Every structure is written in C-alpha cells, then in structure tokens.
Image (cartoon, rainbow, N blue to C red):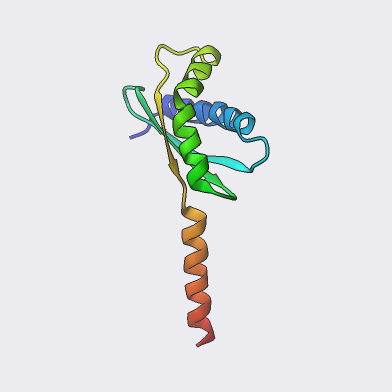
Amino acid sequence: MVTNRMQKFDELILREVSEELRLLFPDQIVTVTQVHISKDLSFAKVWVSAINNIEKVINTCRIEAPRIRTVLAKRIVARRVPSLYFVSDLTEEKASKIEKLLNEIKEK
C-alpha cells in the first residue's frame, strides 16, 4: 500500500529527475512517465520514454544515475535519496501494436 507521503516523494523525484533529463538531453523529447520508490527509500525505479533511440537514452541515464542522485541530494531535503534505476516505458509502443492489431481485425 502506497501512503500519501510515499506518493508525494514519488512525484517529487519524478519532477526533479525530469528536470535533470531535460538538461541532459536538450535536443530530444525525453519523458519520465512514472517513479516507484521502495518502502525504505533506498531504491527508485524510473520509467522513461523517448521519441527516438530509447536504448541510447536509457544507457545514458544509467551511466549518469550517480550524478543525478547527487544533484537530487542537493535539491531535496530528505534523510535518504534513493539510488536510481532507469527502465524504458514501452506503454505507447504496446498500445500502438494493439491498435494496429485491432485495425487489422476490423478490416477483415
């Protein structure tokens, strides 16, 4: 069960990581879609979507994760800032695949 405090912390991390990614990728559209932080606040899973070359974006994010965490520690007043783990959010790709399949069925 996610408490209100945890949800607010998730949203705070989402905003701050989004800002850092905007600075890291000025020429690309990169979006943080969701963040889930462990109950002990030691680990955060960050879902990222990008228009082009999502693999390159995720690899760069994973390389830059310690630096982003350091920046977050300076901005956020918290006892502990979680370690960041970036994963690609494939929701849009899955949705477009399902939509394509439904259109194919509709045409038949």
